[in-house]
Length: 397
Ligand SMILES: Cc1ncc(COP(=O)(O)O)c(C=O)c1O
Image (cartoon, rainbow, N blue to C red; front, side, top):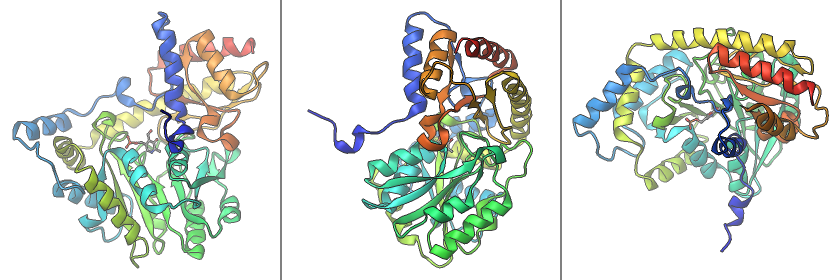
């Protein structure tokens, strides 16, 4: 029996590389893992007050199925945070839907939004789920350029050129994975204008909103006041809880233009009953409790970012922009040498030097090619060692 056509072409480069790496581990190789954006695999831990809130909820038998949209105290805390920090307006808790990570939110939102033949504009390069799910729904992700030598800002002219009558939404990922870019107000406003002119919504993924190192982050709701927005956010990164699987989608839709699509998300949410209830109580504490760990996380990330940025640019054959947020850097391979593609380069780097990274074309064939993504969550000694190995590897390329 064969798998259905809709899943045959699905790819997820980040985990595909891990599969190769695990084969090497099985052969006894010791690897440096710079491929997965999971802070808890390194020296970052969920703040203890959040863990305690989870345990308390479980001990108090708050282990029932919750409301499909999420427990009320969590949606209230999300509304407060999004209004205070990211500029959301009038956010009733009915307009917030808690999901099993943003990942489930992407599946629900695109499932409710896209019909076969539709298009969605996504940044190139982009986090891979945003190109995979449109395919799954028989629609198409069309990539717009982000400009590598302008620190990966979105090319708003390219967006304008690519909007057509099939376009159902414009996606922005800000701060961005894989580039670490933080979008400027000018670009955000231009995107809001384009969406407004064509009467299409914006989807904004802001999961790295509080992990900015230099540039101030501007939430899309504070810029796009008259354009309908599907906002995506979650707890995996800022609150160091990726395995808890809690995220959310919320709506900014003063004229009820996209509410019907949002109602589709609610229907899908009901089908899967709810997300982990004690974990939702942990998330209430995450938002309401002390926020000090964010400053500490950012300080650690800044040091590691500065180191990897410096080391990469010192390597002949590699050049890179400086990420301003999150924990990813997306260098350009200036010298592919004997390798035909960035994927060959990265898989050989893995086999020869034992460093796990992700090939750039896995984030978008056109705008990701000849790049690769490194995660700088590991300690400085590991980053230094990985860079020594890259320096050695590229001499033989
Ligand atoms: C931009 C972006 N969105 C969403 C996700 C997935 O997040 P979640 O853990 O909430 O499913 C990631 C994970 O790396 C990401 O980088």
